[in-house]
Every structure is written in structure tokens, then in C-alpha cells.
Amino acid sequence: MTAKNRICLWYDRDAEAAAKFYASTFPDTRIVEIQRAPGDYPDGREGDVLVVLFEVMGIPCIGLNGGPAFPQSESFSFQVMTEDQAETDRYWNAIVGHGGQESQCGWCKDKWGVSWQITPRVLTEAMSHPDRAVAKRAFAAMMPMQKIDVAAIEAAAAG
Image 1: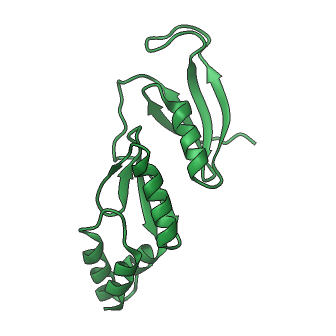
Image 2: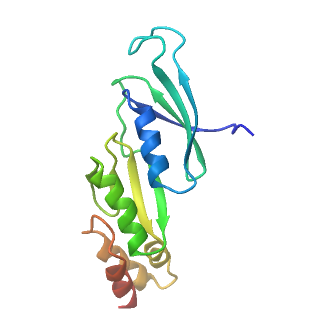
């Protein structure tokens, strides 16, 4: 069944490479279809990869090779909920270690500029804890972090 709604991510020329990286990194991620340009266009030629239909962890996406006019920004990100430090490290290290860039509070960018939030479940649970003191301690512990340290969040939540 074709999704009625997809996320469209604009790439300069690397939508296929990005989709292949995502498929090799995240579970339930695959390339669905590669569409080639039927004619020349401002940033490419007939036969170039124009659109890549793919899914990231089950979310339908379109990778559009639209040229350099619209770079990615943090106004869009994928949030990946992780279960433990090992899973957090695996995704973070894959993104940052493949030409990406670290940011703050569990955010990083891949080499194509797409933002990712690698978020351990323990952080989300602590931040929404009914005891606001627990949430405040977890928040304070998270603020100086780049990659989230699960043990540090657990210790902060525990007081």
C-alpha cells in the first residue's frame, strides 16, 4: 500500500547514498524505489537519480536530489528512541563516524545535514516524570551532554 503522506528530504545530489546509509544503519529501513530524471533539469541530466523512495524505521520518505538551493536544518529531525547505552552509542557513532557532526542534548547531523535525535528512553521517561524534581535533575544533567550518557541520566534522576 502506498503511503498518502511522506517526508520529503531535499539533498544536493546524494539522496541514494543517504538512503543506502540509513538502510545499513537502522532497522526497518529500506530503499523502496529509485526514480531517474526523464529529462534534463536545472541541477541534473536525463537519467540521473532524481527521487529515492525509502523508509526510515518504517517512516515513508522521499529523497529529492534538488540541488544545493535548500540545505537541511535542525527544524526537521528524526528522533530515534534507544533502549540502552549500547544502542545509543551504535546509532550516534554510525552517524557521527560517517562524516556527521555532534551537537548538543543528543542531537547530531549526518554527512548530508539531516538532524537526528538519538534519545534513550530513560531520558524521555525522566523528563516526563511526575516528580518535577526528577525531571529537573535529568534536564540539568542532559544540557551539557552531546551524546546522551544513560548512566548519568539515571544517576541524576535517582538524585
